[in-house]
Length: 357
Image (cartoon, helix red, strand yellow):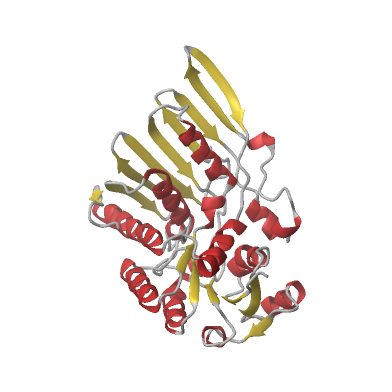
C-alpha cells in the first residue's frame, strides 16, 4: 500500500496555482492537504480545483500542523528563508520555490538546520525537467558535437510595461529576472558543466521606470568552454533558446517546453499521456561533420516531466532515495547571482574559486 504524505502549500499565487498544486496532485502518495490562500479569488480557485483540500488563513496553520509532513513554500522571495526555517524547526520536510533564498548566508543556515533536524530540504528547480533542456543534455552526452566550445542559453519574454503591484518589479532583494529566469539557466548550466571558475555579468534596467533588473547576460568561464546565459523582457522576436557549438558542428533549439502553458491552461499531468511532448515543429537542428560528410537532422525532443521533481521528493522521504535537487546546488545558484551583481557593480571578472560548494 502506498504511504501517503500530507502536503501543506504556503502561497497560492501563480506559483502555487500553476507549478505546485497540479503537479503535487499528479504524484501518487502526495496529498495536497492544506493550502494558505490569502485573497478571496485565490480561495475560490482553491475550492473549485481542490475541494478536498483544507484552506487555512496563514502559514503558521501549516507549519505547526501535526497532520502535515511536507511544507512547500511558494511565496514571494522575501519570506522563503523565514518560512522554510520555521517549518524545519517544526520538524517538517521542506520544498522551497526557486530562488532558494535572497542571500547565500540564509541558504547556508537552512542547509545546516535541515541536517541538524534530519529533514529533507530541496528547491523547486523544475526546469531540470524541461523538454528542451533534457534534449540539449542528450545531444551533449551523445558526443556528436565533439568538444563543446560555446554554449548559449536564453530565457526571454516580451512585456514592455511594468506589471502593476508586482513585487518582482520592485527594487528589493531577490527581485528582477536574474533571480527568476536567471536562476533556472544557472542551475541548468551547473548540472551540465559543473562549477565555473569565474563570471562576467551585464545587468540592465531597460524599460521605462524599471527598478529591478530586466535584462541580463552572464558569462561563466570554464576551461576551453564559454557559457553565455541571457534573459530579457523586451524580446519580441524570439532568438534560439539554446545554441551549442562544438568542434564537429552545431545544435540550435528554438521554442520552449510546453508544460508551463499546459498548466496555465488548467491541464493535468496525471490525465495526459503525452504530457511534456514538444511538437516536431520546434525540434532542435543538429548540423555536424561526420566521416567527412555534412550531417543535418532534427533531433526529436525529450519528453518534459515536471512531476518527476515531486516524485523524487516523495521517494527521498519515503524510500530514502537520493535527492535530485540538493540544497547545496541551489545555494550555489544564489552565490553566483550575488557575484554576478558584484561583477556588474565593479565592471570586472569575478573569481568563483572558493565561493561554490
